[in-house]
Length: 164
Image 1 (spheres, one colour):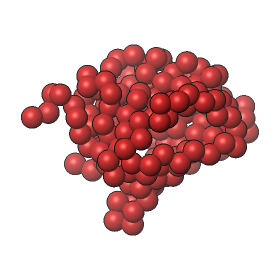
Image 2: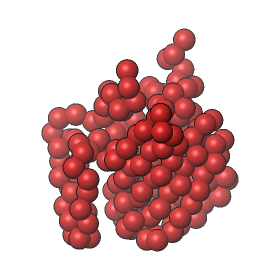
Image 3: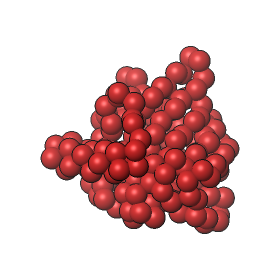
Image 4: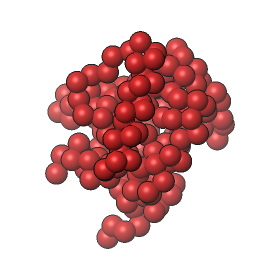
């Protein structure tokens, strides 16, 4: 199964997903931005608490053979991408619009429009919207099993306790 299909398996479905995408698109339009013509993925990380733990992803590219990935990540106010790390993936986050509270390497910092943060493999990280925020992630390819979440109830990733 390819990585996008794995992400689709844990994406939010139905009316809640449609409402979330509509609200995100409205905010992005207010900022005067255009998004790529790809299907957005509202992800709740399988926890069924999208407004608390989740994000909406626009996968621009996930070129495993070529060695790169590019995604837009949108979070609503108070919404968190959960604490995790990667063994292989190196990521760089660029804050396109808004503010996020980034937890990284045991510290917390607020990042705003224009800020950049490289995150090396093995570095725990998480971010929360302080108001709505749009981030650009440029990284090595997204391989779902290279996500190691602190919350082992998240039903994906290399350390999911349901795997065995």
